[in-house]
Length: 246
Image: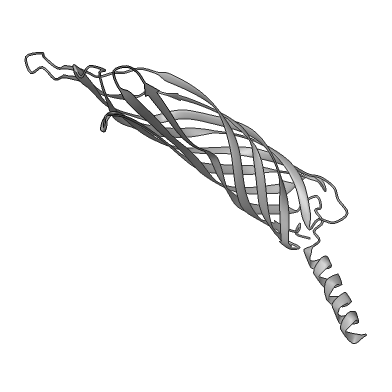
């Protein structure tokens, strides 16, 4: 009997400890790591002349600290700076030789805001939420690579950089907060993110002919480019909830 009573008391205390209630004026402090995408693609092309394989790796990740305030029992709004990194690599091979290599890296820092809505429930051991965010900032990128002409007449080599790029993104996600204690929780979420960037890359383009009697051609491209991306996001985070100071 004593063992059953002890178990019941312990269960009640645990339930109380893991049950969270949000109130207007409470704060939430946390950070999340979001994988924007990870893709690996392979394409095989066979003709009467040769067989080639193109492989592509695409990866992006972001770190997002945040601080928010509850404006009522369900909604928190706040600010969220973010640091993001993206990498893309394309390799083309034929007959054991590499005829195409393109590698690009980009970084950006943004500052924005978010609004999170927690769905009401009788027990907040697990609290479902949806979140909207919007941010803008600056970034930079670097691209290097080469590509051989089909018959090996020449090879194009290029290298370019950009800095001070304008970047912006917005996204919508859904997830859940799994409470480890009454004031701490792990976040798990999935969502969609729309990104935009405007840059002014500068660099060098060299067309190197295999025939030594043919003069090589060097150019310095100077142009503006715009990019719009659609991404699927999966992320995890950690949150600390602080009660309003009395």
